[in-house]
Image 1 (cartoon, rainbow, N blue to C red):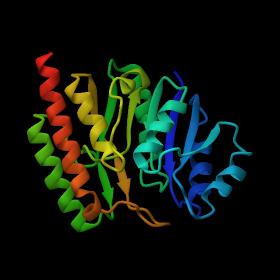
Image 2: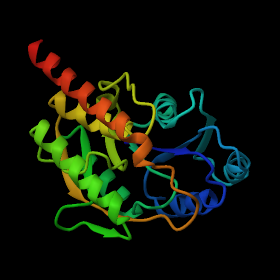
Image 3: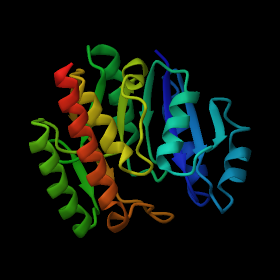
Length: 237
């Protein structure tokens, strides 16, 4: 079962080479490909990756056709050829050991997706900004209540999906980080099978975070309402 790892990147020239080296040297036992989608970077990100991929035949590089994280994810899914798809961020905030755990579980379990949670027993979170953490937990608990779900980390980007199941959630309409809310809500609304597992997370050490709650709050609210209305319509069918 081939694994497609999608990395949407924007202005990650400083750390992307280290990320690629670490990923490619750590998962040799897995049949994988890496799909990097350059989302209109205005630094040397594209050039750095172009040189790096000459050393790794499993790295594929594309320029985003529609600016925005949502467009980058959609393009990455379109270009992927693996039976399972994992979305990761390029800042190494997620643990490669968890990636391996995801891959083993989704092969052995009858599930459509594995949802990692940073906020259950067994998880490990390092240096999470306090204000962001506070807003994260409030929003996730509201979402959990509205969707009557046992999951509590919807906005976490790092999850793995069977590609056939992921295709069933499309079209994905979110243009920014809210795409990471849209996908799991659509998985849940369609009554697909998923497993929740604890994961580790640490704050980025290099580069600049792209997430801005002040700018994104209206987009998250839109996605929440959109997915809730979709859930109601699906029930009526």
